[in-house]
Length: 245
Picture 1 (tube, rainbow, N blue to C red):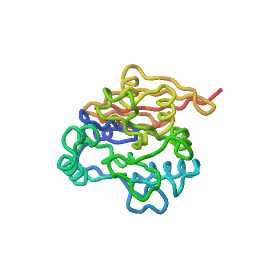
Picture 2: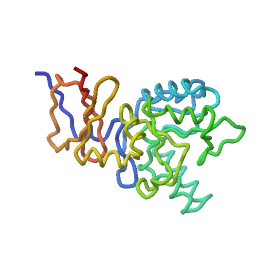
Picture 3: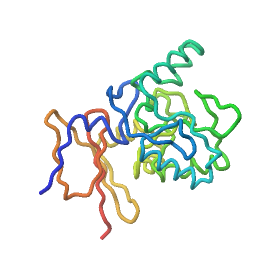
């Protein structure tokens, strides 16, 4: 039987990794990048996340109207943004809207700040409306693997103020499950840690659960159809597809 060995390093990568003040990102990792949206060469994302973002914006009718403000940032860039915000806006504002270097999702290449096209766009708090093509983008984003990462009402869980412009790629079917159940990423990962779940999905079902990964790693059989993501907390999250009978 063919097998795949997953190591502790694998727990630190994948679309479901948690990056926040309690779960900093490992230093030295850099995703494979490409432009976040067509014609916006200066804002980059991890390649698959970028493809899914472009597909979602196109499906919403938002190409040219939804602008990519900030995507991937190096740790050096994140530190500069943190320092500039501290100097210009003070500590309270900065802690609410800017993550510390090493604790920013932007360093993964899986997060994007979006805005409505306008002559001036605020870099820290860009404006993305909830109506028109912007509302349509929000509605269909989970179908393309994207979630609004810091929704209002979840501040005590995420540690970040509401940011209706900040979206995070977590992939399918996770984004749809989170949207349907009103869960932020921290809550979703806690649910998986507590025993996992089974979800009806596209003519079949998926089972999603977490397994711990010790120093010796984890060996999984390739005969089973599954995808794997780390959680950045010592675990691997398995999504196993169950075909309909």
